[in-house]
Length: 401
Image (tube, rainbow, N blue to C red; front, side, top):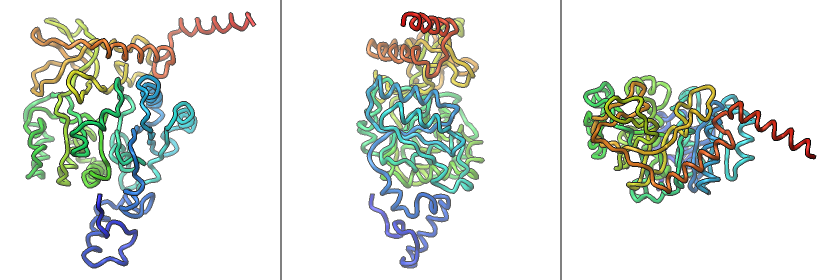
Protein backbone atom coordinates (compact mmCIF):
# COMPACT_ATOMS: atom_id res chain seq x y z
CA UNK A 1 0.00 0.00 0.00
CA UNK A 2 1.36 3.39 -0.98
CA UNK A 3 1.04 5.81 1.91
CA UNK A 4 0.80 9.57 1.86
CA UNK A 5 3.71 11.52 3.32
CA UNK A 6 1.48 13.22 5.87
CA UNK A 7 0.73 9.82 7.44
CA UNK A 8 4.29 8.52 7.53
CA UNK A 9 5.75 11.02 9.98
CA UNK A 10 5.52 11.16 13.72
CA UNK A 11 5.14 14.96 13.84
CA UNK A 12 3.61 17.57 11.52
CA UNK A 13 6.55 20.03 11.74
CA UNK A 14 7.92 19.45 8.23
CA UNK A 15 4.61 19.15 6.38
CA UNK A 16 2.95 21.57 3.99
CA UNK A 17 -0.17 23.32 5.29
CA UNK A 18 -2.62 21.04 3.46
CA UNK A 19 -0.74 17.98 4.66
CA UNK A 20 -0.78 19.31 8.22
CA UNK A 21 -4.51 19.73 7.98
CA UNK A 22 -5.00 16.18 6.71
CA UNK A 23 -2.65 14.74 9.32
CA UNK A 24 -4.48 16.55 12.13
CA UNK A 25 -7.82 15.39 10.74
CA UNK A 26 -6.57 11.79 10.70
CA UNK A 27 -5.29 12.10 14.27
CA UNK A 28 -8.53 13.67 15.45
CA UNK A 29 -10.53 10.78 13.93
CA UNK A 30 -8.37 8.19 15.68
CA UNK A 31 -6.95 9.94 18.77
CA UNK A 32 -6.38 6.59 20.50
CA UNK A 33 -4.11 5.26 17.74
CA UNK A 34 -0.83 7.11 18.29
CA UNK A 35 1.51 7.77 21.19
CA UNK A 36 1.62 4.23 22.56
CA UNK A 37 2.85 1.42 20.29
CA UNK A 38 2.54 3.45 17.10
CA UNK A 39 3.77 6.97 16.40
CA UNK A 40 2.84 7.15 12.73
CA UNK A 41 0.78 5.35 10.14
CA UNK A 42 4.04 4.02 8.78
CA UNK A 43 4.68 2.19 12.05
CA UNK A 44 1.48 0.16 11.56
CA UNK A 45 2.42 -0.80 8.02
CA UNK A 46 6.03 -1.72 8.84
CA UNK A 47 5.05 -3.83 11.87
CA UNK A 48 2.60 -5.96 9.87
CA UNK A 49 4.26 -8.95 8.21
CA UNK A 50 3.27 -12.32 6.80
CA UNK A 51 0.19 -14.42 7.44
CA UNK A 52 -1.22 -15.76 10.67
CA UNK A 53 -4.12 -16.56 12.96
CA UNK A 54 -5.27 -14.17 15.68
CA UNK A 55 -7.37 -15.37 18.63
CA UNK A 56 -8.58 -13.10 21.43
CA UNK A 57 -9.03 -14.74 24.80
CA UNK A 58 -9.23 -14.30 28.54
CA UNK A 59 -9.03 -16.82 31.36
CA UNK A 60 -12.76 -17.49 30.88
CA UNK A 61 -12.17 -19.05 27.46
CA UNK A 62 -8.70 -20.45 28.02
CA UNK A 63 -9.86 -24.09 27.85
CA UNK A 64 -11.53 -23.50 24.51
CA UNK A 65 -8.46 -21.77 23.09
CA UNK A 66 -6.15 -24.53 24.27
CA UNK A 67 -8.36 -27.13 22.59
CA UNK A 68 -8.69 -24.93 19.49
CA UNK A 69 -4.92 -24.65 19.02
CA UNK A 70 -4.45 -28.35 19.75
CA UNK A 71 -6.85 -29.21 16.91
CA UNK A 72 -5.10 -26.82 14.52
CA UNK A 73 -1.64 -28.14 15.33
CA UNK A 74 -2.14 -31.87 15.95
CA UNK A 75 -5.14 -32.89 13.84
CA UNK A 76 -5.21 -30.41 10.96
CA UNK A 77 -1.41 -29.96 11.00
CA UNK A 78 -1.73 -26.23 10.40
CA UNK A 79 1.62 -24.46 10.40
CA UNK A 80 0.24 -20.91 10.42
CA UNK A 81 1.68 -18.86 13.32
CA UNK A 82 -0.87 -18.01 16.00
CA UNK A 83 -1.07 -14.77 17.97
CA UNK A 84 -3.02 -14.80 21.24
CA UNK A 85 -4.31 -11.35 22.15
CA UNK A 86 -5.43 -10.51 25.67
CA UNK A 87 -6.33 -7.27 27.41
CA UNK A 88 -4.08 -6.55 30.37
CA UNK A 89 -2.37 -8.53 33.11
CA UNK A 90 -5.63 -9.54 34.78
CA UNK A 91 -7.26 -10.79 31.59
CA UNK A 92 -5.14 -13.89 30.95
CA UNK A 93 -3.08 -15.29 33.80
CA UNK A 94 0.67 -15.79 33.55
CA UNK A 95 0.14 -19.53 34.08
CA UNK A 96 -2.24 -19.76 31.13
CA UNK A 97 0.08 -17.73 28.93
CA UNK A 98 2.97 -20.03 29.75
CA UNK A 99 0.93 -23.14 28.95
CA UNK A 100 0.02 -21.86 25.48
CA UNK A 101 3.57 -20.96 24.43
CA UNK A 102 5.13 -24.06 26.00
CA UNK A 103 2.66 -26.62 24.63
CA UNK A 104 2.42 -25.35 21.07
CA UNK A 105 4.94 -24.21 18.46
CA UNK A 106 4.83 -20.77 16.87
CA UNK A 107 2.40 -19.20 19.34
CA UNK A 108 2.90 -15.56 20.33
CA UNK A 109 1.35 -13.42 23.07
CA UNK A 110 0.23 -9.80 22.74
CA UNK A 111 -1.17 -7.57 25.47
CA UNK A 112 -3.38 -5.15 23.55
CA UNK A 113 -3.72 -2.82 26.54
CA UNK A 114 -0.23 -1.48 25.70
CA UNK A 115 -1.10 -0.60 22.10
CA UNK A 116 -3.79 2.08 22.26
CA UNK A 117 -5.29 4.70 24.56
CA UNK A 118 -7.62 2.40 26.47
CA UNK A 119 -9.42 5.29 28.14
CA UNK A 120 -10.80 6.41 24.78
CA UNK A 121 -11.68 3.05 23.26
CA UNK A 122 -12.50 1.09 26.42
CA UNK A 123 -11.72 -2.31 24.93
CA UNK A 124 -13.87 -5.10 26.31
CA UNK A 125 -15.91 -8.05 25.11
CA UNK A 126 -16.67 -8.24 21.40
CA UNK A 127 -15.17 -4.80 20.77
CA UNK A 128 -11.63 -6.14 21.08
CA UNK A 129 -11.81 -7.95 17.74
CA UNK A 130 -11.14 -5.22 15.14
CA UNK A 131 -8.50 -3.65 17.39
CA UNK A 132 -6.83 -7.07 17.64
CA UNK A 133 -6.51 -7.22 13.85
CA UNK A 134 -5.03 -3.72 13.84
CA UNK A 135 -2.54 -4.55 16.61
CA UNK A 136 -1.58 -7.94 15.17
CA UNK A 137 1.96 -8.59 13.98
CA UNK A 138 0.53 -10.14 10.80
CA UNK A 139 -0.35 -8.40 7.55
CA UNK A 140 -2.81 -11.08 6.43
CA UNK A 141 -4.98 -12.04 9.36
CA UNK A 142 -7.47 -14.80 10.08
CA UNK A 143 -9.28 -13.59 13.18
CA UNK A 144 -10.93 -16.54 14.95
CA UNK A 145 -13.16 -16.74 17.98
CA UNK A 146 -11.91 -18.88 20.84
CA UNK A 147 -14.70 -21.42 20.24
CA UNK A 148 -14.43 -21.64 16.46
CA UNK A 149 -13.76 -25.21 15.37
CA UNK A 150 -12.07 -26.03 12.06
CA UNK A 151 -12.09 -29.39 10.32
CA UNK A 152 -9.93 -28.23 7.39
CA UNK A 153 -6.70 -26.25 7.30
CA UNK A 154 -7.57 -22.54 7.62
CA UNK A 155 -4.85 -21.80 5.05
CA UNK A 156 -7.62 -22.49 2.49
CA UNK A 157 -9.07 -19.08 3.41
CA UNK A 158 -6.05 -17.28 1.99
CA UNK A 159 -6.38 -19.26 -1.24
CA UNK A 160 -9.94 -18.08 -1.87
CA UNK A 161 -9.96 -16.09 -5.13
CA UNK A 162 -12.44 -13.53 -3.77
CA UNK A 163 -10.24 -12.89 -0.75
CA UNK A 164 -7.24 -12.45 -3.03
CA UNK A 165 -9.17 -9.94 -5.12
CA UNK A 166 -10.74 -7.87 -2.32
CA UNK A 167 -8.45 -8.47 0.65
CA UNK A 168 -11.49 -9.41 2.74
CA UNK A 169 -13.55 -12.51 3.42
CA UNK A 170 -16.65 -12.13 5.60
CA UNK A 171 -19.16 -14.87 6.43
CA UNK A 172 -22.95 -14.74 6.49
CA UNK A 173 -24.97 -15.41 9.62
CA UNK A 174 -28.17 -17.44 9.39
CA UNK A 175 -31.26 -15.76 7.96
CA UNK A 176 -33.54 -14.95 10.86
CA UNK A 177 -36.07 -12.29 11.94
CA UNK A 178 -37.00 -10.87 8.55
CA UNK A 179 -38.91 -7.64 7.95
CA UNK A 180 -38.30 -4.03 9.03
CA UNK A 181 -36.10 -3.70 12.08
CA UNK A 182 -34.63 -0.95 14.21
CA UNK A 183 -31.06 -1.56 13.03
CA UNK A 184 -31.93 -0.99 9.38
CA UNK A 185 -33.97 2.14 10.12
CA UNK A 186 -30.99 3.55 11.99
CA UNK A 187 -28.53 2.54 9.27
CA UNK A 188 -30.51 4.11 6.43
CA UNK A 189 -30.69 7.39 8.33
CA UNK A 190 -26.99 7.96 7.67
CA UNK A 191 -25.92 5.43 5.02
CA UNK A 192 -27.61 7.09 2.07
CA UNK A 193 -25.39 5.88 -0.76
CA UNK A 194 -24.23 2.36 0.08
CA UNK A 195 -21.73 0.33 -1.92
CA UNK A 196 -23.16 -2.10 -4.51
CA UNK A 197 -22.29 -5.08 -2.29
CA UNK A 198 -24.13 -3.50 0.64
CA UNK A 199 -27.25 -3.04 -1.47
CA UNK A 200 -27.21 -6.81 -2.09
CA UNK A 201 -27.10 -7.74 1.59
CA UNK A 202 -30.08 -9.48 3.18
CA UNK A 203 -29.85 -7.00 6.07
CA UNK A 204 -30.29 -4.05 3.68
CA UNK A 205 -33.24 -5.77 2.01
CA UNK A 206 -35.11 -6.64 5.23
CA UNK A 207 -34.57 -10.39 4.85
CA UNK A 208 -32.69 -10.73 8.15
CA UNK A 209 -31.48 -8.61 11.05
CA UNK A 210 -28.27 -10.66 11.33
CA UNK A 211 -26.14 -10.35 8.19
CA UNK A 212 -22.65 -11.31 9.27
CA UNK A 213 -21.21 -13.93 11.60
CA UNK A 214 -17.82 -12.82 12.91
CA UNK A 215 -16.36 -15.97 14.48
CA UNK A 216 -13.91 -15.81 11.57
CA UNK A 217 -12.89 -12.64 9.74
CA UNK A 218 -10.16 -12.64 7.10
CA UNK A 219 -8.41 -9.37 6.24
CA UNK A 220 -5.34 -8.28 4.34
CA UNK A 221 -4.67 -5.48 6.79
CA UNK A 222 -2.44 -3.09 4.85
CA UNK A 223 -4.64 -3.35 1.75
CA UNK A 224 -7.83 -2.65 3.68
CA UNK A 225 -6.55 -0.40 6.48
CA UNK A 226 -9.04 2.41 5.88
CA UNK A 227 -11.97 0.04 6.16
CA UNK A 228 -10.47 -1.55 9.27
CA UNK A 229 -9.96 1.82 10.97
CA UNK A 230 -13.63 2.61 10.43
CA UNK A 231 -14.62 -0.74 11.92
CA UNK A 232 -12.53 0.21 14.94
CA UNK A 233 -14.29 3.57 15.02
CA UNK A 234 -17.68 1.91 15.32
CA UNK A 235 -16.33 -0.18 18.20
CA UNK A 236 -14.92 2.74 20.19
CA UNK A 237 -16.58 3.07 23.59
CA UNK A 238 -18.73 6.11 22.82
CA UNK A 239 -19.79 4.84 19.41
CA UNK A 240 -20.59 1.28 20.39
CA UNK A 241 -22.88 2.48 23.17
CA UNK A 242 -25.16 3.45 20.31
CA UNK A 243 -24.18 0.87 17.67
CA UNK A 244 -24.66 -2.14 19.95
CA UNK A 245 -28.21 -1.01 20.70
CA UNK A 246 -29.01 -1.18 16.98
CA UNK A 247 -27.14 -4.35 15.94
CA UNK A 248 -25.92 -7.39 17.84
CA UNK A 249 -22.37 -6.67 18.97
CA UNK A 250 -19.41 -6.27 16.62
CA UNK A 251 -20.70 -8.45 13.77
CA UNK A 252 -22.28 -5.90 11.46
CA UNK A 253 -19.65 -3.23 12.16
CA UNK A 254 -17.22 -4.94 9.76
CA UNK A 255 -19.18 -4.43 6.54
CA UNK A 256 -20.62 -1.14 7.82
CA UNK A 257 -17.12 0.19 8.53
CA UNK A 258 -15.90 -0.81 5.09
CA UNK A 259 -18.89 0.87 3.47
CA UNK A 260 -18.20 4.05 5.46
CA UNK A 261 -14.64 4.04 4.08
CA UNK A 262 -15.96 3.36 0.56
CA UNK A 263 -13.75 0.29 0.54
CA UNK A 264 -15.09 -2.71 -1.35
CA UNK A 265 -15.45 -5.97 0.57
CA UNK A 266 -16.45 -9.58 -0.08
CA UNK A 267 -19.23 -11.37 1.78
CA UNK A 268 -19.02 -15.11 1.18
CA UNK A 269 -21.61 -16.01 -1.47
CA UNK A 270 -22.23 -19.46 0.02
CA UNK A 271 -24.93 -19.28 2.72
CA UNK A 272 -24.18 -20.42 6.25
CA UNK A 273 -25.03 -23.94 7.31
CA UNK A 274 -26.46 -25.27 10.55
CA UNK A 275 -24.51 -28.34 11.66
CA UNK A 276 -25.20 -30.73 14.52
CA UNK A 277 -27.05 -33.81 15.67
CA UNK A 278 -30.45 -35.12 14.61
CA UNK A 279 -33.13 -34.95 17.31
CA UNK A 280 -36.82 -35.75 17.53
CA UNK A 281 -37.43 -34.00 20.85
CA UNK A 282 -38.04 -30.47 19.56
CA UNK A 283 -40.43 -31.12 16.68
CA UNK A 284 -43.86 -32.78 16.58
CA UNK A 285 -44.04 -33.07 12.80
CA UNK A 286 -40.52 -34.01 11.81
CA UNK A 287 -36.91 -33.91 12.90
CA UNK A 288 -34.77 -31.15 14.30
CA UNK A 289 -31.10 -30.38 13.92
CA UNK A 290 -29.36 -29.13 17.08
CA UNK A 291 -25.92 -27.58 16.94
CA UNK A 292 -24.06 -24.55 15.62
CA UNK A 293 -23.72 -22.18 12.66
CA UNK A 294 -21.01 -23.24 10.23
CA UNK A 295 -19.47 -22.22 6.93
CA UNK A 296 -18.04 -23.38 3.61
CA UNK A 297 -15.98 -21.54 1.02
CA UNK A 298 -16.46 -24.38 -1.45
CA UNK A 299 -19.86 -26.03 -1.76
CA UNK A 300 -20.02 -29.43 -0.14
CA UNK A 301 -16.90 -28.93 1.97
CA UNK A 302 -17.39 -27.74 5.55
CA UNK A 303 -14.54 -25.56 6.76
CA UNK A 304 -15.54 -24.53 10.30
CA UNK A 305 -18.33 -23.72 12.70
CA UNK A 306 -18.74 -21.49 15.73
CA UNK A 307 -19.38 -23.09 19.12
CA UNK A 308 -16.76 -25.84 19.44
CA UNK A 309 -17.86 -29.41 20.24
CA UNK A 310 -20.26 -28.55 23.02
CA UNK A 311 -23.90 -27.57 23.27
CA UNK A 312 -23.40 -24.61 25.61
CA UNK A 313 -19.93 -23.18 26.27
CA UNK A 314 -21.20 -21.02 29.14
CA UNK A 315 -21.97 -23.89 31.52
CA UNK A 316 -19.62 -23.93 34.52
CA UNK A 317 -18.86 -27.65 34.25
CA UNK A 318 -18.92 -29.65 31.02
CA UNK A 319 -18.78 -33.41 30.60
CA UNK A 320 -19.16 -35.92 27.77
CA UNK A 321 -22.94 -35.56 27.86
CA UNK A 322 -22.54 -31.98 26.63
CA UNK A 323 -20.72 -33.03 23.45
CA UNK A 324 -22.64 -32.75 20.19
CA UNK A 325 -22.69 -35.85 18.01
CA UNK A 326 -22.24 -34.12 14.67
CA UNK A 327 -24.18 -35.98 11.97
CA UNK A 328 -25.58 -33.60 9.39
CA UNK A 329 -26.07 -30.02 8.26
CA UNK A 330 -28.74 -27.91 6.59
CA UNK A 331 -27.83 -25.00 4.31
CA UNK A 332 -29.52 -21.65 4.87
CA UNK A 333 -31.56 -20.66 1.82
CA UNK A 334 -31.09 -16.91 2.38
CA UNK A 335 -34.84 -16.51 2.82
CA UNK A 336 -36.35 -16.80 6.26
CA UNK A 337 -38.83 -19.60 6.47
CA UNK A 338 -37.08 -21.95 8.86
CA UNK A 339 -38.44 -22.57 12.32
CA UNK A 340 -36.21 -22.51 15.37
CA UNK A 341 -36.50 -23.68 18.94
CA UNK A 342 -37.02 -20.93 21.52
CA UNK A 343 -33.32 -20.77 22.39
CA UNK A 344 -32.29 -20.89 18.68
CA UNK A 345 -30.14 -23.97 19.35
CA UNK A 346 -32.23 -26.28 17.17
CA UNK A 347 -33.54 -25.93 13.62
CA UNK A 348 -36.97 -27.53 13.18
CA UNK A 349 -37.03 -29.14 9.75
CA UNK A 350 -40.22 -29.44 7.73
CA UNK A 351 -41.19 -32.64 5.92
CA UNK A 352 -39.71 -31.40 2.65
CA UNK A 353 -36.48 -30.12 4.27
CA UNK A 354 -33.85 -32.83 4.36
CA UNK A 355 -30.47 -32.47 6.09
CA UNK A 356 -27.25 -33.38 4.30
CA UNK A 357 -25.30 -36.05 6.15
CA UNK A 358 -21.59 -35.51 6.67
CA UNK A 359 -19.13 -37.11 4.30
CA UNK A 360 -16.97 -40.01 5.46
CA UNK A 361 -13.94 -37.72 5.45
CA UNK A 362 -15.71 -35.17 7.68
CA UNK A 363 -16.93 -37.89 10.03
CA UNK A 364 -13.40 -39.26 10.44
CA UNK A 365 -11.93 -35.84 11.27
CA UNK A 366 -14.69 -34.96 13.73
CA UNK A 367 -14.42 -38.35 15.42
CA UNK A 368 -10.67 -37.84 15.82
CA UNK A 369 -11.26 -34.39 17.35
CA UNK A 370 -13.87 -35.74 19.78
CA UNK A 371 -11.74 -38.71 20.82
CA UNK A 372 -8.77 -36.43 21.44
CA UNK A 373 -10.92 -34.19 23.62
CA UNK A 374 -12.19 -37.20 25.58
CA UNK A 375 -8.59 -38.22 26.25
CA UNK A 376 -7.05 -34.81 26.98
CA UNK A 377 -10.04 -33.12 28.66
CA UNK A 378 -9.17 -29.60 27.56
CA UNK A 379 -12.83 -28.56 27.68
CA UNK A 380 -14.87 -31.36 29.24
CA UNK A 381 -14.33 -32.69 32.75
CA UNK A 382 -13.68 -36.43 33.05
CA UNK A 383 -16.43 -38.43 34.73
CA UNK A 384 -15.95 -39.58 38.32
CA UNK A 385 -15.84 -43.15 37.02
CA UNK A 386 -12.97 -42.27 34.66
CA UNK A 387 -11.10 -40.42 37.44
CA UNK A 388 -11.41 -43.43 39.78
CA UNK A 389 -10.30 -45.74 36.99
CA UNK A 390 -7.25 -43.55 36.34
CA UNK A 391 -6.35 -43.48 40.05
CA UNK A 392 -6.74 -47.24 40.24
CA UNK A 393 -4.38 -47.71 37.28
CA UNK A 394 -1.83 -45.44 38.95
CA UNK A 395 -1.97 -47.46 42.18
CA UNK A 396 -1.57 -50.75 40.25
CA UNK A 397 1.42 -49.39 38.35
CA UNK A 398 3.08 -48.21 41.55
CA UNK A 399 2.59 -51.64 43.17
CA UNK A 400 4.18 -53.32 40.19
CA UNK A 401 7.35 -51.26 40.49
